[in-house]
Amino acid sequence: MAGPIDGGGWLRTLRTDPDPRHYLVCFPPGGGSAGAYRALVRAIGPGAEVLAVQYPGRQDRLGEPQVPDLHRMADAIAAELLTRRRTPLALFGHSMGATLAYETAQRLTRGGQPVAALFVSGRPTPDYAEPGRLHLGPDDALITELERLATDPSSVAILRADPSLADLVLPAVRADYQAVETYTHRSDDPLPCDIAALVSTEDPTTTPEQADRWGEFTRGAFERATFPGGHFYLDDHVEEVAAFVTARWNGVGKLSGS
Image 1 (tube, rainbow, N blue to C red):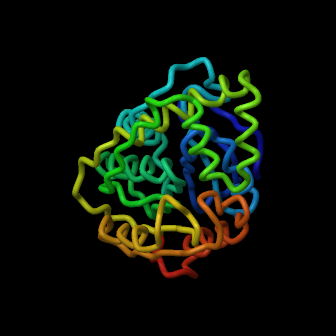
Image 2: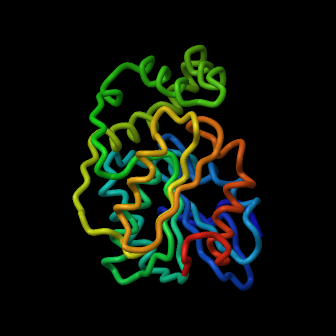
Image 3: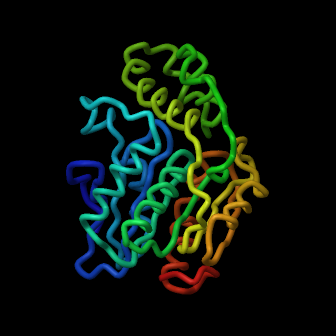
């Protein structure tokens, strides 16, 4: 049953189930929050407990300092998940959240928590070099980048006309860009869990060929799924993505599952 965001620390409960057969943890994209996955949660079938990561500096953690370091974030998230010990556990991350989900999966594996499947969406592999300086630039440059990625650029352009809104939104965006632009991949060990890479046809950040390289990061099964749309294709294809994830849980899709 989907409900209000609940909990403290790094994890928020988006959905509970009286008899969960699967556990899913969702990692928001850069600048996002746990609430970004509400629509996906509603579309997922019964039998799943769904958690989402809440990054510092937004929503109910607005008063906390940002953590612009993916490794530090993964350390904290994995530590909290290791106290819960849920099986079978799957991780889903979009954009920055995909890299963070991967790093968390590495730490969970080392900590003895099995991960059944890792769903990585709209993101090249962790070893993809993405140096950048957007996090050091002016607000206008950040807004331009957000417009480039947005399904509806006009929804972002309002930040130029409303400085108070920009002051609320952009610090989290800047911190997340810093986390991505300063990230380095440290582990060459393929994960034992299955990996599914989700990519869209018009995403300027990730090509299908780049998504295919995620197969090199697993000793388990790999599959790539392609959806129409841009970087935030998920907004328009929630039902299809939910069906894709659910099918792999239930053994209908190609991945071996848990």
